[in-house]
Length: 567
Image (cartoon, rainbow, N blue to C red; front, side):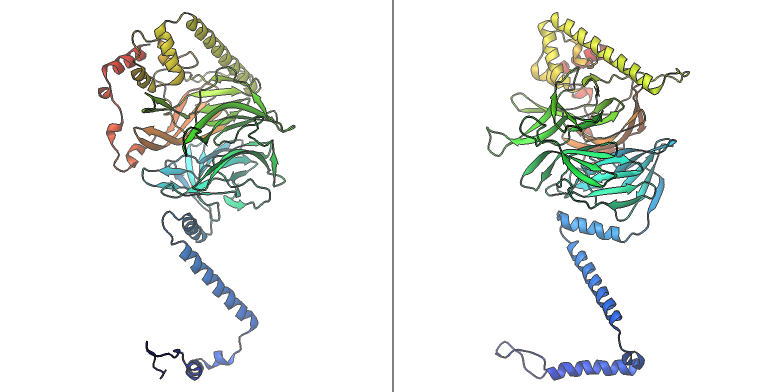
């Protein structure tokens, strides 16, 4: 202590061993005076080990806390912070009869049969963009279909927050695979390859750490078939390059094993790599429709071009050889972000969007669809799913569910065939104005018809085909229906289709929805179970003028709209 230490001294400044020893001796003497019995007692090896273990645990906890103090776009820090918060909880709690989940898209909505008299929809994860920041959810909700009430489940030790994952139900468990976590500014992404299982009897999560799992990805699609979760496609984005997948994997829920099946894509004998495809399984054959992918444009450096696929493929699970199928019947037009699910012998498609350029690329028209299409899985033909007026309660028909399904299918096919015959007859006798109107309808639907009309300056009489639905039969004008959207959550329980949330554009803004709709697939008529909240006002500095009124339209557009309403 007596050694001078200064900038001019060339000696190292250290404490003498005597001084250090003296300090320790003083502490020992003080401790002996205050607690002589504790000092005299020797510490056992077990106690030393326990102290070291506790010290290491405390050190590890402090390191996790430091890692969790990163920036708001540090994904590792955000995930570490969420894990710390989750680690503080131990018991499973359930909040009964709560408000519906917040607005979101790219979540999973899984139909589950808890008992013959109780059916539920299990909603997990998703994301919401408010115009400035993106928020990714890891919450879990259960919707009691018979009672029409939501419950929120708080289950510690579950999967990290994610979106664009897949989920499937089998014998009391919900399986969740993959997905992504997006930074608040949407600049960084973390893709998952973990597989989780939720026990619906205890609301407990369990991670299944198995070999042979698919690579990390999001935007993939999956379907549960006889206890096997079939997964296809998806993409991986490392911030510099996006890679799309065209592989197929099967997870066996009984054997708890992953198997890679199907041929490598890209050679023309299998679906090209893509995300957001539609999957269905019938008679041990996997059917794949559509999807979306981006590629670098050959004529422009570093420019990407998006493709909304419209091809249909079949993969028999016995031979594992892909076969491309013809587009038969009345298939939907090209679109991205649609949702597809299976009901008995058909796949039901809802929603989607198509972006089209007009006026030499100066105008981009985005059409959000709320149409319904059905793919008959045995004949593999497409037909529009025509809406009907809701019928009152009548007496029992005595028909079995299978007989009712066959009768409904026969009606839909007959309606579609009539529409095709009418369209062929009209084309044979069309005027130039009719042909122009038909061309517009082939590329535009709903409210964007008037935009296309204004762009092309169609003159003279306008064919009523501009406003005719694809099935050839106009649904009731006062019938409620959900807004067109993309990335919605879709599920079928029994013979009822459910749609929750999604995204729609209003002006230049993307609005995330939180409405819940049901549709009886025996007598298709929409019912709104939960009205959308004021999601439009959730955006900072939202402008109510984004909603278009008749005062904003020019005379040509008004005349076209009035003519369409009279048709």
